Every structure is written in structure tokens, then in C-alpha cells.
Image (cartoon, rainbow, N blue to C red; front, side):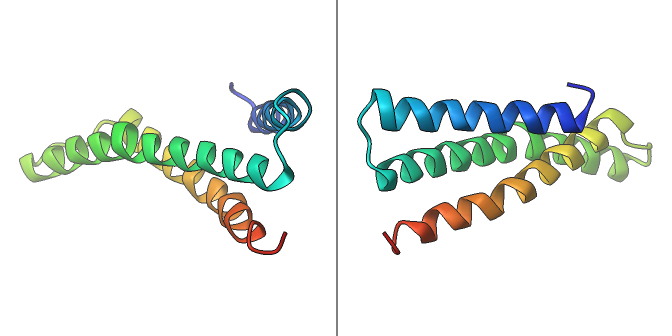
Length: 102
């Protein structure tokens, strides 16, 4: 999506749909639903690091060592995915800690 606001809205709708499916359809407790969504966020973050950020950084570092400017698309991709991981880390931490309070 080109619009960050639209992407954020779509993400909220998707997470709410998953939470609804887990609790109402699947019969999960709140704690189980929080663990499931936290695991989903953690999986997304791990995928971003392993398959998007690190490969792009390796190509960027190789280009800099070779004395050529790195591809701007790779720099933007790595930066955007890193920003996504930063934004997902706060809800992930909350979901991990919330399970100890219920």
C-alpha cells in the first residue's frame, strides 16, 4: 500500500479479525488469543529480519566495500522493514507482559 494510514488501518482490521476468530470461533481465552497474536507479530518480525533486512544490508555493505553507491531501493527496503519491526515491538512486548497479569 502506498498510504501508511491505509496500511495501518488494514493491519488493525486484520488483527481484530484474527482476535475475533480466535476468541469467538476458536473458543480461545484472552490469554491464548494474546499469545497467538504475539507469536504472529514475532514471526512477522523474524521474517523481516531474515528475508528482507539482512539480505539487503549484505548487498549494501558489498556495494560500499566495492566503492559503488548502494541501490537506493535496497536502502529504502531495509529502512522500511526495520521501521515496521520497531512499530511491532511495542505491541509485542505488551502482549508478552499482559499474559503475566491475567
